Amino acid sequence: MKRCTKCILPENYPRITFNEQGVCNYCVAYKERKYLGDDALKERIKHFLETKKDRNKNYDCVVGFSGGRDSTYLLYYFTKVLNLRVLAYSVDNGFIPEQTKQNMKNTTDILNVKLVIEVHDLLKKCVKHTISSWMCMPSLPMIETLCTGCRVNMIRGTFNFAKKNKIPLIITGSTPFESAVYRTKIIVLTPKRYLYQIIRNPKWIMNRTYLITQIKEYLYYFHSRKMVKESEILTIVLFRDYIRWREKEISSTLKNELNWKKNPNVESSSRGDCDIALLKLYVYTKVLGFNDKVDNLSCLIRDGQIGREEALERLNKEEEISENTINAILDNLELNHIDFKNCVAKCARK
Image (cartoon, rainbow, N blue to C red):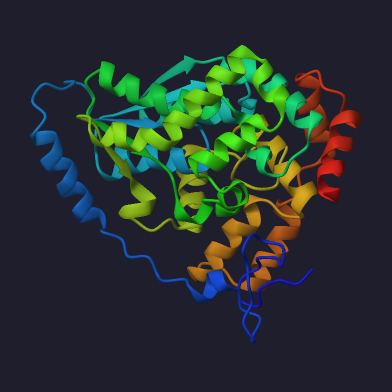
């Protein structure tokens, strides 16, 4: 497979082109990101909180906490570095691995942070129908919908919890180095295209719970940002706007300060905090020949954090999701291994 000579994006990556030197258009267009820094963040938070007189007296902010690598570091940073009074909010979607649950407990115990876990069963109610609908007509764009029910739970849950408890500040852990932009390029997320992909396979809309949930996710995806901006709640995206996401520093902090451990069922330290997320990565890998990891490592190359040879070595080790791991997830969902994998293979042949 041909790859970019600077990063490691493959030739079948969506909308990729190469120049005469074999460098991809993503590397050519790359510009070093500018960050506002710690001082600007402290000043913004200080000024914002001073304007909120009628607010919770015990907590300054809510951190959306999945137990994964990035949100765990967020909890550490806002507690230990910025010395804010932090409350960790998490959603149990029914598919959180045991190691992730243990990481959540260890982290909040060590940092002495209150952890609130709300159980939401939308993903659990939808996922079997979602996967069986996809198997009925395997489609590359619709792989992204296999986790329908999770996004609306986390976005709405965090926002509603903060609003209800008069906590005016929400912290999220989105990072430009793990945005996996190929997914949105595949489905071309405009409202018209999004709805078209849902209705072209009639089975998708034959389950009332799924249909209602999908509509909610559609509305939250296209309108949640507007809703938050017009509210009394400020959302801080730390790694996008204020500080550089440094993989080695974050990994070292988690290991040495918080006793954080990766999911033992995968080699990568990212994307291991939900079984359905792993199932999606597996499908993308089998259908496309790559998943989020190639995006992540290519971003780290452009940012100067790792070299290309190291990235290729890590890709070979970290990208693959084992058949045993996938079989265990399928068993939990009561889905036939062979039927599912035949559908994945069918999608790959299209």
